[in-house]
Amino acid sequence: MSHDHSHHHHHEHGHGHSCGHGHEHGHGHGHGHGHHHHGPADLSQAGRRFAWAIGLNVVFVGVEFVYGVLANSTALMADAGHNLSDVLGLVLAWGAAALARRSPSARFTYGLRGSSILAALLNALLLMLACGAIAWEAAHRFSDPAPVQTGTIMLVAGIGILINGASAWLFMAGSDHDLNQKAAFQHMAADAAISLGVVISGLLIAVSGAAWIDPLVSLLIVGLIVVSTWSLLAASLRLVLGAVPDHVDPEAVTAYLRQQAGVADMHDLHIWAMSTTETALTVHLVMPAGYPGDAEVDRIAAHLKERFAIHHCTLQVEQGTTAHACALH
Image 1 (cartoon, rainbow, N blue to C red):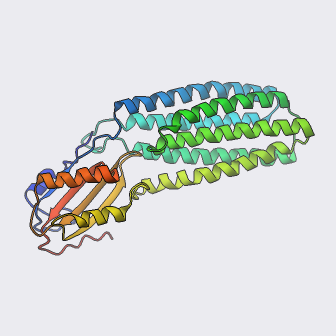
Image 2: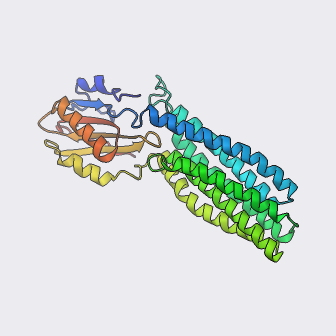
Image 3: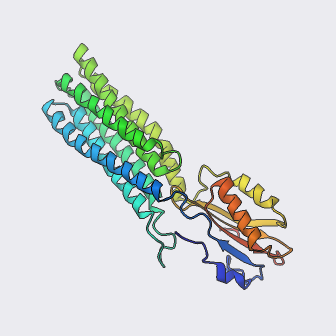
């Protein structure tokens, strides 16, 4: 796990580094607090969740596709295709969770933990693509309805509800603190909704004989999935662009840092997500009285971790004797 000591030696000699200006600053210390904020038990638990969900869904996709062909139901085949896209999404998310545990190297100083953010983004995009495919299929079925075996459809889709519901339940515990597991949870819940829609459409077609009910129900479900996935897509895009994670209030962090003893001013505050579970912060604190000592800097870093769940802090302390021009252009 990375210690943010990359600036440590540099700051000891009181040189300004951040803007390429040779200002004499005080001391800046980078302290890497909070290693991975979930222990090995959590990680292996997440791995087991992914393994179970992938195993269950791979078997079900095969069964559902075969019965879709036998029942002459494009709805079942489309549901199988959508389930398959989610299995691919789960594999991506699981791979990202494994990569996130890779140790840092000379080139990848954060390790590969950022891959979890990319996986969350790819998951959201895959779900959007699956929605497009289902909508396309539904549009075709309005103009070309085919007779279907409604009993088979309802039975197989009913099994789908159970499998996807069980998979969603596996990820529910981890979805509150990990965007990746949240993506997996939303996928599984969306799959269960789709299977339920297929059951309902099968029942209605059996009762009324109206084949257009099937594509109508699938379009309604696509609408629901797009709405629920949009927030995941937006959240993962924000993290890719280095935005402050949703659970951190940057104004509260600013207010807290300004309240600390000896802090006259501050600038260059950056808060960003290193992975779907870890947050980093860098800031320049102007302290005219000089460097307050390791214990004080450690205390601020520990408080940022406890109160704001910011795990990796680099705090640069300056005496504020020279002007700084560090605006981002």
